[in-house]
Image (cartoon, rainbow, N blue to C red; front, side):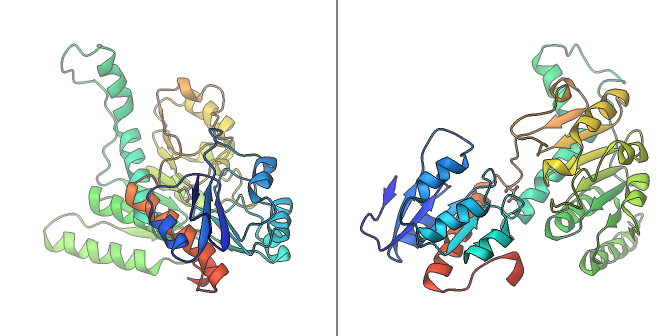
Length: 348
Ligand code: DGY
């Protein structure tokens, strides 16, 4: 699909993105926009080389693509200076290779914070209260009337929510769980989240003045402390060498037998094969997963487990957010081509 065919700068998007605001932003600034509408979901390096072609000033790519030296040097050769990932996470991008090739890299932080946190909160509740299992039961016609033991799950109020990685999304998630369900907080992060701590303290005071049990918070000195103490644990680290298989056989064994584990960050943060074994051995342990180690696949056995809620990497999938991500991605590319400021983690 081509917009503004006579535009001076050629900008390619490897996928159609929601809304038209991002297209207008580019076409209004003399860009010719080419959108790949191929049916194939995951494009290979060769597919992308074909899209870059001989002239490409900027490229908007997706987290399913592997952006390394081959692609960045091809983009540079085609006259390009800018690449934007339409995602906040950029573990699929070799930033050093891009820098070496003279390509600026952008991502799309901020606009997906609350949306992603909402999905992590939804997975927490769905897993704790067995909502998907109960939905399947109902649709299958198994419901014969109310029973005291039917789909008994965990109450969140008064339990402890554990957050691993208290950045933008982890903090937003924590606030939702604390304010929405009056959970106590334990978190682990390399940096101290003073804003989160101030929020919990103020909210605790508010509850106290209303005659309610105040919530508490604790900054853990190790991840293991969170795993040991929390009832619901949500993972929000970036994926890099240090967080690959952060949750493995050993760390799973540290968690409470009835804990809920949620992952809306990146799949490889969990050793998924070890998780499947743990779920099989501990039917009261539950997970809510938005991401998988080897997307789009799930490790064998996961799909059969009743104690797992699984959704296809949709944490940022609200209309407002996805349009915002597309707009930021377009601005990143335009910014470099036209020398406007660029949005990225490094300059926020
Ligand atoms: C991201 O932005 O990194 C998410 O995984 C997709 O929204």
